[in-house]
Length: 112
Image 1 (cartoon, rainbow, N blue to C red):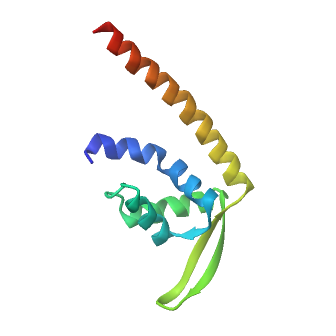
Image 2 (cartoon, one colour):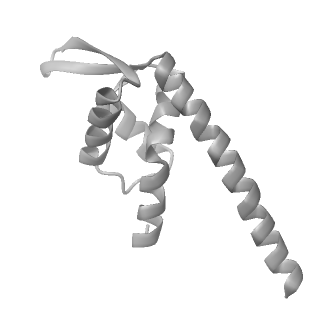
């Protein structure tokens, strides 16, 4: 993924993570692994952890510490009502942008 692609991804990564948490509760490494399986291979764990801290501070998730056999307790994130509202806003914005981009893309083809 190029630098511009990475910047574009950073702009929507919060929405992607909220969408993952809408499906199920998860801890940071699970989210990172799942995203990599979906093709987001360049995402660093640190990026996800920093994003999780931000969405926790903004009150978009509930956090529960769960014991881990491999070390310290894991923070498991669950999307709460405020997070669902934020995700809904994200999808509205995404839909608006995707429709407009498709119009630009289609219009550009017809001009050639």
